[in-house]
Image 1 (cartoon, rainbow, N blue to C red):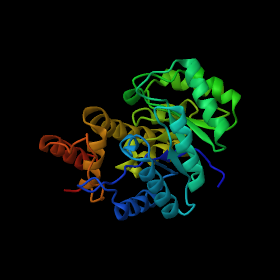
Image 2: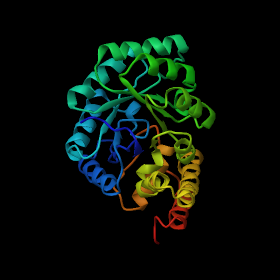
Image 3: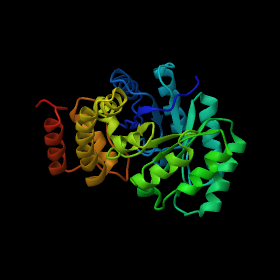
Length: 298
């Protein structure tokens, strides 16, 4: 499909069984849960999908399951980032071969490349694999920021780059990217607390971890904004901000998102080691939050 990169796109979790195996039946059920609540795409094997804890074969399998289950209803974007350029190219080729609509490529982690090295990294992937690419900035996990000037330079140089997911939380940086290349690429919020601000500045939506748990709430921000209902958009954003602060900032987000989904009756399963399930106090805090947001009735 020709990808339309806008709206709310969950970077979906990978449901694991207690022994660490991928729960394929649960994954298929979850795909339909997100689709039924009106999401505009899915990202497989991103940060929330615990891709760094998965083998290459496991990543291929998850992407393949999601593509088949989605059946062209929405775009499927494959997370293909890795610490090295060579591995990133291999994973991106896999994504294209399986049939993903685009690749979300996080900046290399563990080592911290400078701007020149980052540009060469993405150039090498672009030259090696002909697939639409979304740049991904997530300082929380990589330990450094993908600077706006790198995004802008790459976006101006390569039409293959169709978007950027910015999870840094700086509306200033997001706004500068939108100002310079916002008509060329889709600028997407990567954090649930800045979705509305991103849209107001000219961004196209968000790839949001909390959309795993509350896809309809996150979609409300986008839908009300597009309709011009600023009050309802702000109301939805405030709820999303509260949920984001709890699930993403207060606790291990891999564990907290799965805990919240399990409490809502969705088969999210277990996080994969080294992440551990949450302790009882955290579970109770999440239960209260879900109730307060009318996401959980009991």
